[in-house]
Length: 412
Ligand SMILES: Cc1cc2nc3c(=O)[nH]c(=O)nc-3n(C[C@H](O)[C@H](O)[C@H](O)COP(=O)(O)OP(=O)(O)OC[C@H]3O[C@@H](n4cnc5c(N)ncnc54)[C@H](O)[C@@H]3O)c2cc1C
Image (cartoon, rainbow, N blue to C red; front, side, top):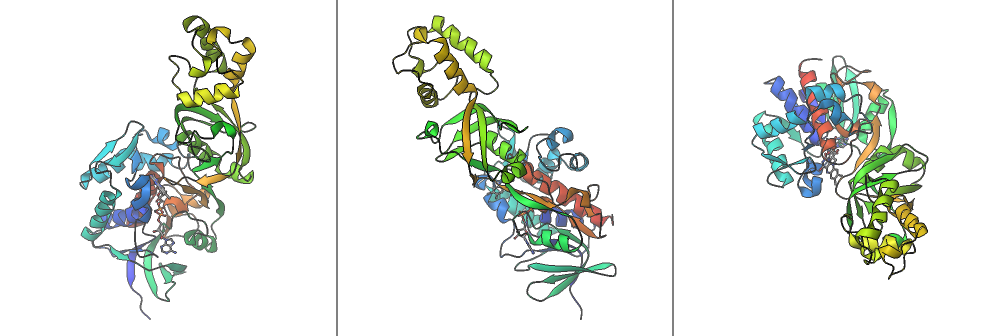
């Protein structure tokens, strides 16, 4: 029985599958390339990403530095980022008519602030290159037949291809991970990354929406720490500092069943000693001012300051000139080393990823080809790679997809 025959099949119509298919077709003009997507839409995550704006990459143009944003995959991505880094992503989209802009925190978005611009660009590239996109095509099984792959779909049909890219993304019970496992690849168990912390604590009650620009957060008894903006939510803490910490500790925190303590310095890089000295000066600079009303020059949301001062036992009327050494030290401890008990996690609605997947050692990162089976490639979140928030997850999907497609076209 004859099957539709391709030179390259990408399993999964996400960022990595599209970049793989496009890179292959550009490198091997006239080849037969297909994207198999199990649902009725492709690029679904691109659509919802970055709050509908699609944070395509991060303005970090040094390959080595870029890798430091990946809790898993850091060492493996150095070579790939030299070959196709953030600047290449920017050039790739600009060359195809998508103008990009960089926000003050380094995140790169289309100037339209609309992820559809990115989708339109990818769809038009596939059309121009004659890449076939097949919907409702869920891949169920892969097997080698001579020099080719037979790809069985859930609907009972089969297609064949010289090279296959597994780019099925990063959800739990991932089909691509299962396919890789049945072909003998080691799999790292999945755990969510980029989640927010559930902290039922009186000190945070009623403060939802307050953001501290520069906080530092750590987890006692571990090496886990991070800094950056921290946001108080209805049920705990979120914001880049928390999301980064959740990414760095994705496995360790899953093992703790999301029950652990954190220490927050709400004054960011400022040490307790430095803050103590500043508070001491306030006796001279603002003697009659009430402590609960804050400290001139110290940038902290006033409602948070008020709450932490209250919690340190500072009476409502107390002025800086009457602040005792003991009270001052309690305030410093609350501001620079506040302890909170995390009692669960919640998905961050703006961006989340899964850690775990096909083990890094199973893949040759020069080509993204399996070290076990020739003609089989991996890209995107199906690999045990994940980045912190800020455009890094798409960057690794573009990079690994692009390299897989180019290498497969070169027969590597
Ligand atoms: C809400 C949200 C917002 C995000 N925002 C950002 C952001 O702004 N910036 C950023 O860098 N990252 C962001 N991310 C992360 C980013 O979206 C992912 O890391 C990225 O999409 C991974 O790309 P991928 O191609 O590997 O997988 P996916 O985009 O998940 O694509 C995989 C595709 O494979 C298909 N598939 C699965 N199994 C099969 C099968 N058996 N047969 C055929 N097809 C199959 C799926 O239906 C899917 O279409 C966000 C994630 C979420 C959830």
